[in-house]
Image (cartoon, rainbow, N blue to C red):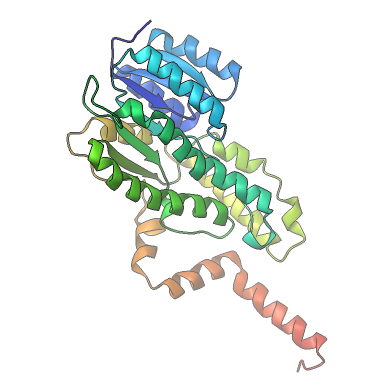
Amino acid sequence: MTIGKRAIVVTGASTGIGFACVEILTQKGFFVFGSVRKSVDAERLQTQFGDDFAPLLFDVTDADAVALAAQEVETRLGGATLAGLVNNAGVAVPGPLLHLSIADLRHQLETNLIGQLQVTQAFAPLLGARKPQGGAPGRIVNMSSVAGRFASPFLGAYNASKFALEGMSDALRRELMIYGIDLIVIQPGVIATPIWDKADNSDFSHFDATIYGPAARRVQKWAVEAGRAAPGPELVAKAVLRALTAPRPPARIPVIPNGALGHTLPSLLPARFVDWLVARRLGFIEARDKLRVHHSDGDGNGE
């Protein structure tokens, strides 16, 4: 059965920002295809959103499953153009880079960067990246983060994925101009989503024996508290709606409630000064001084 509405694909639709995007888009008259990884989530969303929603079962790192989902959407479109693709799915792998496993780093990049391009390549023809078809070209929305602008200790792998996504988005936006397909980046700050429950349950025990252990625990506690007290994902969903529907949306839409101190100010200060502020807040300077004293005593040169 074909669709009589403009259709959007949203990845990572089961909870948080993805779920909020499905909710606002269906309310605004779109038909939404939402990707999930579990059948139980597919059934739940189908029940909640009814005839305005169709689940797609895939992980963004699974090329075969992504390709099958694109074929399913193409069939349902019946020759029409896909109005939008929201690349929202992602993960956050925390930990100090010196002690992070390479397998964890690969998982971070495979999901947040390579997976995004894999999905984009699969759905781009439906957005208009091929011979002309019915309807105007669609748009792509890439979910980045303020972490793609400012790097924080213990989020190095996540920062790497988002900084890379920012660069890839710029290149892709310019390449897609030949098809008339626009690409908009959303940059959320701290938003209250289930990701903070995952952060609270993250196993930091394998970092406890390192010099970063105490600071990593403080950052984990702060992040969970800040995340749970933050505004809800509806703010980001509204930005996504703007990106998909505004006549001339900006290339980037930041969603940073009360972000001047935490995100705008650091970009205006000298990098070395920001380094010092971060190190002082996390106790790195004190730990470094203690380490120097320890080394000096060990060499027999401490006075």
